View (spheres, rainbow, N blue to C red):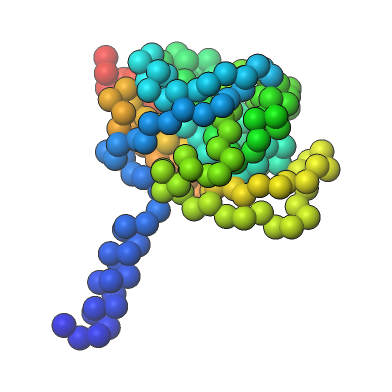
Length: 192
């Protein structure tokens, strides 16, 4: 094999080995401190899957423009997700104290969806997402410092069997939500 073909083959192999988990992969089970409507609780993926599919969406930081828009869009569409039997949980590297405010904020989660804290990025890494450090001096929409790293915006639809039914990434916040809703509705239709 010549060197250029070897480089191409190794590049393709590495590209396929890295990146978010894909459809059919087992979703890593996790528990994490979470908040909904300003109330904290322990979120368990295993427990949530007993009720139906779970939409696990990772986002960079609470109270940033795109993340607030995505959370608000999920909140507006919560009934449609629930009609398909799905639970929604957002996951970020934000502290639980910050997420208590975010979960209750009417311009973000509006008390309708849960958000879980993954301060070290352990959950994000388990889903094979890149975790990056924030830029020093970065502020949120309220002017508060963002003092934590972030994971890339990616949504996983996890079927009741614990396998990933869809991975949604590389889209604007609203399109990400719409694609996740389509995946949940297809999953519900196929189980009828």
